[in-house]
Image (cartoon, rainbow, N blue to C red; front, side):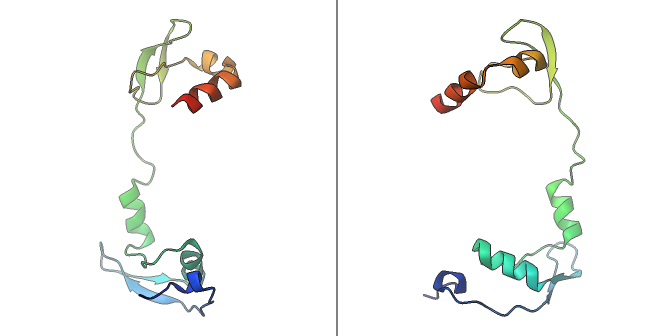
Length: 112
């Protein structure tokens, strides 16, 4: 069994590396700084995708917003929320959510 250098307290000298993207086949640089970051976080695998392909895989934030029309559990007003309500939990309008006591919210989270 080989121990990861970070686990043994060793430091490694890093040098920029060129890797081949698993999606587009293009070459990209895995910099010395990125390698050090990977080591500090305990990551053992090198990245497989260039930044452009990684952005495409993550959706790059261009997903359409999901708006759901609901009735506020507190005041009963019709409102829209930017998510799809699930698990039968209460859904609040913006005004009720803003004025909700923090202690009540923390107690509810702790009960989960």
